[in-house]
Image 1 (cartoon, one colour):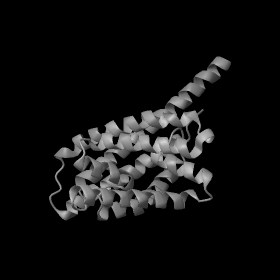
Image 2 (cartoon, one colour):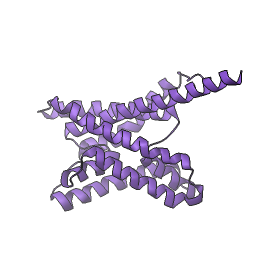
Image 3 (tube, one colour):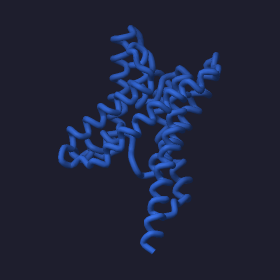
Image 4 (tube, one colour):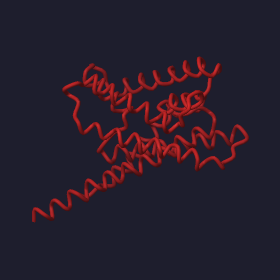
Length: 219
């Protein structure tokens, strides 16, 4: 009986991690589509994209480095409150980073020569990122390091997650703008598509979440 229960628990956990991997893959392709659209990436990808423009790093590699910094920040913020399980964010970051590079390679054949075509590709990217976020939340195992930093700050400061997430995204976008202007001499990676992603991803993810709420993972 206990053996059967253990097997069911193992399958339950495996399903959750597979769901997380699916979410990360969809999200990575969403990032790739937003980069292809050339209308500005989502806030969380703005810094890695700009860094890839002037440093010998791909977008995916720069994403991994940024997430490593976020993990370190969580450890410094939480200290003794930091749970070792959160170090699982590191392999998740590596997986997501390489998937992003694969996504950028895969969508290279897509053509978007006109402004309206760019917007179509951009909106596809936004939808994919939102769907990926919804699956990540549904999996409920490990969050990406960017969200982990926000949660860590909320644990030590009396600020609601929603407000802190907005402030965090704004900080990333401002950082991307500064890096772009300083190292490339012009504004890149942050445009109207970035604003659209900031406004729409959360709302669309919430709608996806309502649909996913009807689907229960059996334990």
